[in-house]
Image 1 (cartoon, helix red, strand yellow):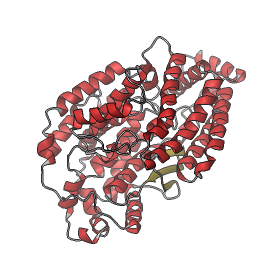
Image 2 (cartoon, rainbow, N blue to C red; image 1 turned 180 degrees about the horizontal axis):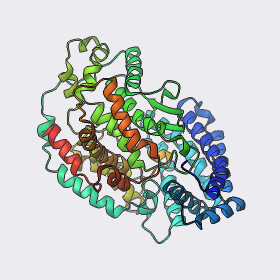
Image 3 (tube, one colour; image 1 turned 45 degrees about the vertical axis):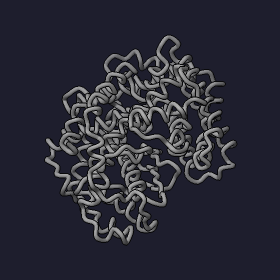
Image 4 (cartoon, rainbow, N blue to C red; image 1 turned 60 degrees about the vertical axis):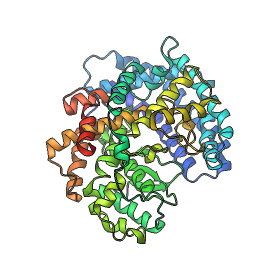
Length: 493
């Protein structure tokens, strides 16, 4: 039993209605991005506001807080009980500091903006989205002020995604990355010969079949996982037995459908492998977002772009387009791993991907610090792409409107993608040592061994450990970009 103390058991019993409200909130958000008619958004936003206010009321209930106070006075709790208390106290502290009116206004705003964003991107109309984005950044600054008026705004916001990590650590991390990336011969790698399949169409039916085959191969349970379509792929977890992932089907570039499917599976597998005693506790589904992204980026990059993965699905890949029938494993491998500056983050190679995240980190800091406003943001964005990648977006859709995150209010989320990509290389290094995995030869048995390693070392603990705690616990070393750099050197240089 993970929770033995009777006071903690009582506390978790009383926490259950909060978890149920969050469950409903997640289900509504999933429906908003998948099946909701667009005109339903205004009513939907009001429902979300009411739900979030109900969560606040439940957490700040006098009886609940009285039990929490008793629990906080207990000294001999086990690690599961300690961590549950820590994150519950952190959550309640936020709800105590955020006025109900702010929560309601924020919820209604976020309930609308993803639909506005989707329309703006489709129409390539930044002016349509900009007033909403301005409001999101304005309210994000206000949120930080409520939570900790004496602290750096970005530190306060980023702490909601990565517990205990601040912008000083992020600056050091990105500085180390930039120092390494500046030495990588990206132009030379970009000039390497390969067959570019980016603009090649594919059979929609065959692509759908391949995505489902891939999920089966990777170990998904069709009774627990669901794959749907959305404007921007995402994953959402209602319970360890109800995991929603989405992908997309652009007209060309099979990789723009395949890689998101594999990426989101990595998230869902993490959520599905949790010890079931942690469900309906403050430890699930929320966890270190960088830790979560380390799962999606591992499956996408290290496994999904491997020769063994391609070899297993070579017949399916060839069936996507008659022009592919004579392509071999190396042709697909070179395409999926080709390094070149590009405009779209989710389609970027493993190396230049970090520049995409760095750009978003810098623009978020500039917007939150008031150095620029949202009207100036597209120009800032374009200049940053020219600075770091030597390319400039031709329109808003391939520029500042390409990501959905800001429309969710997820300011500060982007660094977790870079941190997660780096952490994935640390998992790869440890996994190779522990299991002697050969990514050039993969089958269901090898996938099961990999999944089992992640379940035993990371997944079962859900939100127990932070990024840095996980690195020390599993790899016996501090988190740093060194293993990622070694991985890149071996694979590309």
